[in-house]
Image 1 (cartoon, rainbow, N blue to C red):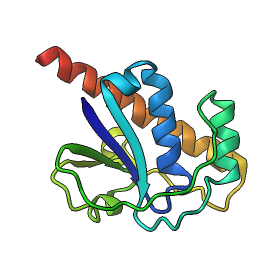
Image 2: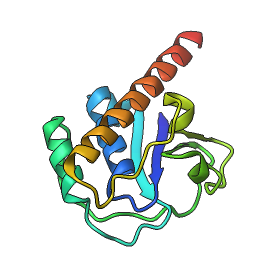
Image 3: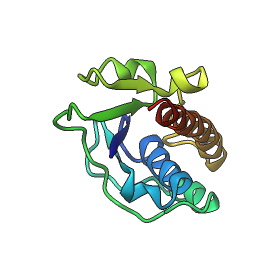
Amino acid sequence: MIKLCFVCTGNTCRSVMAERIFKKKIGKQAGKDFKVLSRGLNAKGDNISENAKIVLKEMKCSSVNRKSVKLGKIDAQTLYVTMTDPQKELVPSKKVISMASLVGHNICDPYGKDVNSYRQCAKDIEKGVDALIEKFSNWRKEL
């Protein structure tokens, strides 16, 4: 099983959208081949942002509310995927990549912005998730 943790600042927008987009795309593999979660570097137990829920619902992903969770103890078996290169430097793991390495740029934080900013953010995240799934697929072929 591959353990994967998406990381952003507050775990109310980007990382939770990435987690849910990834889960939707892998479908039934989510509980079988992958353990997928999300965390925030500075999460404070806030709910998912309303605009994130709107966009997730539009994308037919889970839009169920939950409290944000702070990144705690690092698990050496987990691959951490940060939304930005600077966040990557804050995750003390040898198994960490940033979305920038997957899509060519950092995923901008839409927090406090309008729903269209969240839609653009979700499109960027989806590109990164697609690239990540392709990497996993290629990796499996090599085994």
